[in-house]
Length: 110
Image (cartoon, rainbow, N blue to C red):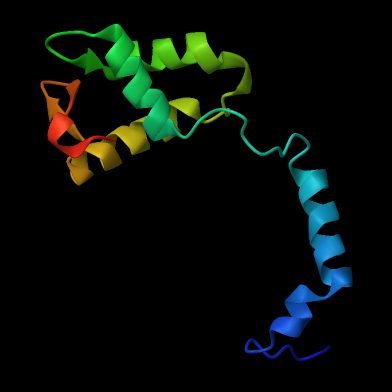
């Protein structure tokens, strides 16, 4: 067994290790691609502007809009990622969340 020094970056950065990791990832994640859709914050902002619902948009309405516009390139975990991003935008003050509806906070443009 070989001891690995955690402070040594040369072990991780060696071409053999990188190649081994890349090949392993390709076997585990057969469709491991970089997303081609915009970041979730931008997709949410666009959805809310185009839906233009006076009292705010539900998570379901936002999700439907995003699926309609970007459906073919969305990740398998779209619903979970959307929910997490909506929560993050609310916590940051970019969205106002009230009665399970989301409204853009124009004071903090997303």
